[in-house]
Image 1 (tube, helix red, strand yellow):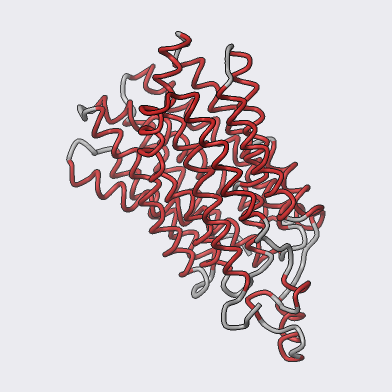
Image 2 (cartoon, rainbow, N blue to C red):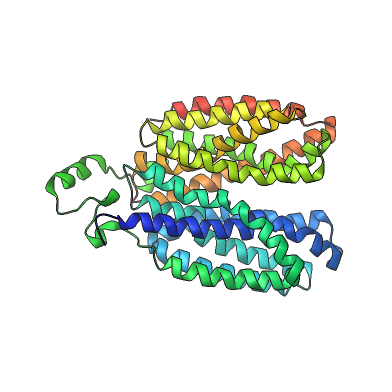
Length: 402
C-alpha cells in the first residue's frame, strides 16, 4: 500500500459501488416490477407494497443485529456474505409462484442487504478515517444517491428479458460485482501499519495524537450518554419526514395537478440531488463542528418541506429538490460522522445499528400519519406543515449534543 494513495480510499470506492448497485436494485428499482407483477399474478398494490416494508427490515429490527455482528466479525466478512445472499435472494425472487414465496424472498433480501448496506458500509469506512471521516462517508454513501441512475436500465431489462429474466441478471450481477469488491474491504488500518487517515503508526508524534484524540467509548457507556439519545431522536424525526415524503410524493404531486410522468421524474431526482448534500455537508463536517453542520442539514430539510407545500409552482419544485434532498442526504452522512467523532469506533457498528433501528420507528409513523391525514382531510398540506415544525425541534435537539 503506497502512502501516496491511502488504502482507505479504495475501501471508500468499493463501498460506493456496492451501495450504488444494492440501492438501485433493491430499493429504488423495485418500483419497476410493480406493473409486471400485477399483470401476471393479479395481486393488489397493497399486497405488493407490503414487500417494501419487509425489505425495510434491513434498516429496522435487523440493523442492531447487523451492528453487533459487524463489530464481532468485521465488515469484510459481512459484506461478502451479504452480496452472496442478495444474489441468491434475487434469483429466488425470479422463481416466485405465490405471494408467500414473494414475501419470503424479500425477507431473504432484507437480511442480505443488511450485510452490504448502510450499517456495514459506514462501519467499514469509519474504521479507516477520523479527520476525514465526513468526506469519506459522504463519498461512500453517495452510492445510494447515484443508484437512481440504475432505474431506467432495470426498466429496459424488464422490457427485453421479462421481470423473471431481469431478476436473474441482477442476481448474477450482484455476485460478479459484489464478491470482488467485498475482497477489497479491510477491517482496520492498524493491521497494515497505518492509523486512521493514513498516518504511519511508527510515527511517535502521530501515536501521541492518536492516544489523545482517539477516545473510545464502549456500547454500555455510550447508551448512558444523553447525546446518544439526542442523536436517536433527531434520526427518528429525519426518518419520519423522509419516509413520508418518499412514499407519498407521487400521490401528493398528482393531487396538486402534476402529471404522473412528471411526478415520477421528481421522485427519481430526489436521490440524485441528495448527492450534493452527501458530498457537501460531508466535506463541511470535517471543517466545522459536526453538530452545527447536522443542524444545518435539518434547516435545509425544514425549508425544503415548506417549499413542498407549494409545489404547484414549478420553480418551487426545483427549490424543494435542491434544498430538501441536500438536507436529508447530508444528515445521513452526519449521523455516522458524529458517532465516529463523539464515541469512537470500537462500538461503532453496534451504535449505528441501534440508531438506525430505533429511528426506523419514525419511518413507520411518518408515512402512516401522512396517509391518515390525506384520508381525513383530503389534503397533505397540514401534515407537511407539521413536519416543518418537528424538523425545527430536531435542530434544537442536535445542538444539544455534546
